[in-house]
Amino acid sequence: MPRPVWSGAISFGLVTIPIKVLSATESHNISFHQVHEKDGGRIRYQKVCDLDGKVLEQHEIGRGYELSKDTVVPVTDAELDSMPLPTAKAIEIVAFVPASSIDPIRIGDSYYLAADGQVAAKPYKLLREALKRSARVAIAKFAWHNRERLGLLQVLDGDVIALHAMRWPDEIRDSSAVAPPAVEIGDSEVDGAVALIDAMTTDDLAEFRDEYREALQELIHAKAEHRQPQPVGGAAPEPEGQLVDLMAALNASVEQARASRGETGEHATVHEMPAPKKTPAKKTAAKKTTAKKTTPRKKKAS
Image 1: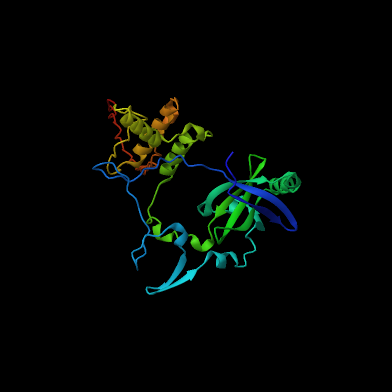
Image 2: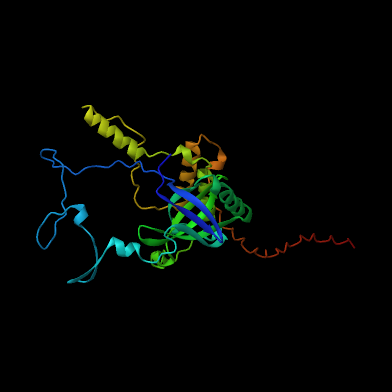
């Protein structure tokens, strides 16, 4: 179990719930050092004062806010700690909203909230069950690293309350500048895209893995063992250039998605809806008048 990154309490009206905050995610990124290509020596960075050129230790470095090019206002840790911050030791719930009303772009890092001690177990369970029964999430304010943040509390897996850091409304950029130009699409094209979505729908995300990281690990191990790296994963597809026939591309994509799942059949093709045929107006046929053959009557002999 990871170590707690923060300890405090959840403030729920007049109810206080002591909790510990633990990171819900972990990074598997492979980090590199910068080295001198000629001899492999490590590249080091030093913190140097630009006035006297002295190399400084960490305990000699403070904070300063630049008002102008020549004016920097120093701010000490003690001054930051003495600022009135009601949420410095508490996650204060300020509102409850439906989960569907939260824009996913505002969600940041995620954390698990664990009840801190037996005394916190009952109020923790009370808040958890209330969130589940109301089908809502809690909006909270909390302070980490000398800044106040906005957060979202929700129940995960039925048992654990999770805290998701949120961005403030003024931190979200306007998306209107990146909207695509107005174009016309047909219903058959939308049906084809929906068919592709259906073919690619899955309930199991555990099947996906980081193939790039696996290939990078194989490269590092192979170089350390003085051998050629073994291929990992599939080759990257080559770009096909400009898209000409959208329906053909959708049909091929649906077939490829179904084939990757081992599915075959006639349903793999999305047929474009044909345009209704125009029925030509019936021409009124001219009536042909057939001349009747008349047989001349024989004259009676007198």
